[in-house]
Image (cartoon, rainbow over all chains, first blue to last red; front, side):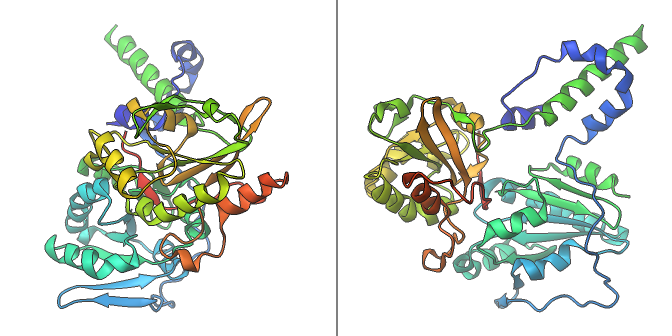
Amino acid sequence: MFIIYTTMRFTLKIPVIAGVMLLCSFVISCKEKADNTEITTQEPVTPTVDTTTIKPPKPLKVYSNDTVLVNAYEYSGLEYYLKQKNDTTYVVNFWATWCVPCVEELPNFEKINAKYKENKVKVILVSLDMAKMVETKLLPFINQKQIKSEVLLLRDPDADSWIPKVDSTWSGAIPATLIYNKDMRKFYERSFTYDELEKEISNFK
Amino acid sequence: MKTIKFLAMFIAIGALTAFKSDIPVGYKVGDVATDFSLKNVDGKNVSLKDFKSAKGFIVVFTCNHCPYAQAYEDRIFALDKKYKSQGYPVIAINPNNPEKQKDDSFAKMQERAKDKKFAFPYLLDEGQKIFPQYGATKTPHVYILQKTAKGNVVKYIGAIDDNYEDAAAVKQKYVENAVDALVKGKEVTVKETKAIGCSIKA
């Protein structure tokens, strides 16, 4: 899976045989690299939000039908959900109903959310569906797929202003996922199988 | 012996992945962009060198299926209309592998170009060879090039403007501002922006 991923993303392939000897003394660091092939940032999470005193921000708009309710935020509101500092690990997936690879991997996130509910792992699905598609596409989709994870709508068309704030390495392509807890933060511009996702999350314990 | 073999393999894999993930890919502003020869919807191949009188290009990686690309279609059309006469034509390239994304097949591209009366080349990146050289990751993704003695130099990378949803609510016309600056012989001020888009399916 990793090889497929890299060949998709990177066309340059450096002959590595020459480097092997050189790297003999760095076995440990290489191992780490092999495990952390995604874009990694482990800066301290700032600014921190004290979740004991700050309530979730007021949504820009609340979309709902008979069975589903989705809060829409601008980035300034969404930020609250990206900077929690408590004992939970948050898995924040950026997706949209029209994004085929996103929809394909969604069941994996749902499964994680269900399986680790009692283990302080929370999945948040941040939809980037366009406002005009929310009532016609997003709400029926949540309904039809019986999505149990929390779904938020990021309604902020000035994407250049917030993409770098989610992660400095994000090009803006989806699917993309941010996994973080109070000590660690990693960003992935890629798709996940269930096993890959579970393995990544296990590093956050 | 087994241990040594295992260790060697382990190091090789480690080295391979370490190197690969550290390689910066795609163009940065200031790099010289490659020319190409890609099939246009009219069946003829198109290269940048064919445009003898052009001063540069607005290369847009875009496609049929992506809602963001669709949202920008009229604006891409308008860019071509406005800037072709000023020496900066739009060159649209579909980077997606039609086997992975049926709506982006060559036949569907032809259909779309005809329906929407595209006045600019709409090329298929057959074999998905060109977009990785540019470093495009999504559609739409714009590269503005300026023709110079050393080749077509990248002057801007990113979004068309700052509002995909509503063309009327746009505050910053990134591409227009950049091309306007180039036409006037000035430096582009905003050289790079980011936007949400559909990941390219190679």
